[in-house]
Length: 263
Image (cartoon, rainbow, N blue to C red; front, side, top):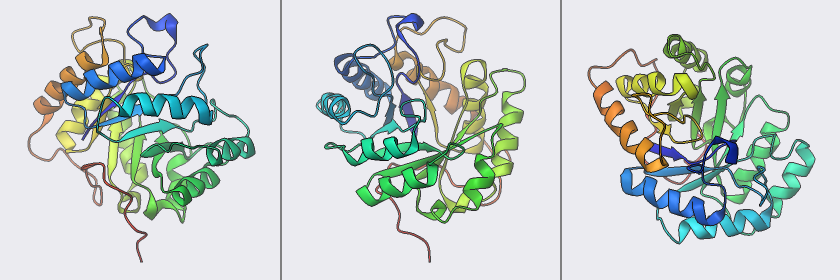
């Protein structure tokens, strides 16, 4: 699976290629899917460009994207969009249009409650496990672990020299990850080395302007479509004999409805 991550915490200061409005996100989504993305992850933005969980803005944005593409669309529930855990839950309860899935960062306060509510609503949960946090330890002990859609193994090391090694450590920390599929990705300078590692390991991955602004050759990306096309090329080049996939890990596979809890 190649997920397109269209904007993330980027702002207009990061360039005109970063989609922020519902219309520009829909255009960018269509381009990314045409280039080969099979799933999308977006940050819903207020008119001033701030991440939000607003039911109204989310409904407008998801509707615009779904009018253009037919792949699953997910959103973030990161604490920066709503720092207060109780207020975050109230926002989510107010959603009138539901995403196919939503990422929940397991190291953040209120993660378990947020994930439980999303599951109750029928929204798939991507468990965001960041390197350099206690997210892997918390997730290993979580009773919700077997019910998540997949694990987002998020390598926060931006150094192109060390990012792949950081990714392997994170995968080791995750262990069997409750048997859930794993999507491995990096950011900034680490984005391309980690994506190539995902290819070698046969794991799902993602690419887009959220994670990196530059193409593998160092040129500035002009669109998410350009990054997705380059990502598929880089991923394919990395494929080959199993590169040391930790026991128990599975690839991301297609985005299907949430698996039932294991016995």
